[in-house]
Length: 385
Image 1: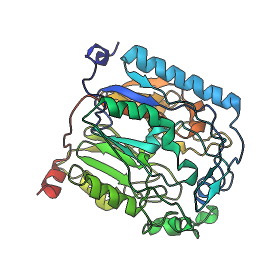
Image 2: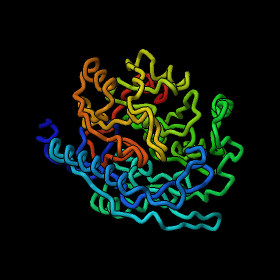
Image 3: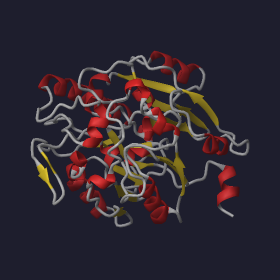
């Protein structure tokens, strides 16, 4: 039994400042009633025009994913005494319509991390950047409302609701990546979102580390979205716009940059952090070690799956010394155990990848022990003058 289970339950309902403090309470998604992503510009860019439109996801695949999630829940609840909250089921066959556009159906609700980030005692609700995810926050609304009501110290905020009209998107961005057409855009750090349009972001583009938030400017978060985060949270956090090299395929930041514990960061070898921020992170005052993730064993996704092969990086930390990793990812497990001394909990989760993400994507930590701290002395000196 992990030592976490012997600690009294948290006195606060909403409290999470980073990815690695001892975990007490989290949401886990539910793939039931999932539908394929409908045709719209960003989903075509994401899946190279192979969207499964108007079709319920295969029930056998849904049940395989549910089996993986139920197994993960048992481990969290019975081995580590972590409270698990499940969202209600939601019918994704419903069409949606706004004054500017309409879609035949929505997608799925397996990834609460895409839609929400917990910043201390604040629930940050993302505006999202895909039309099919416009109302996805409603899946988790009732449970989060209960938490907000119970914890009178908590806040719940969101940016202006996006209209998601065509001017949000760079419609000349290549749908296909034939002959590496997108590299031209990646070299200019330009993606399918218009940086000067209204603020949009997905919450999974935010990686938390105490006083510092790393926020990706990429396919699902634009520069105006980062500006909104800076205006709203700049007095409490240092927000670092994070650009990645060779960024030609949409992937959230939590499958490209992983903080495993204070002082240790795992990066994606195919999408390195842009040099200016990388130099600041690696500044000798900070004393951080960075290493590249091993190439994933699960490197070929099943038909219809639009998840990144780098979901091996999408791990879930129980605490600074204990991390849940997909059990087939032996190279990563060996590295974490033998080089960095982690207790690795291998869990079968590949069949759940079909529904949008790995352990980190398909969970949302609501409460972790700990308070806000700074883990970057260089940033203390440079930013907090």
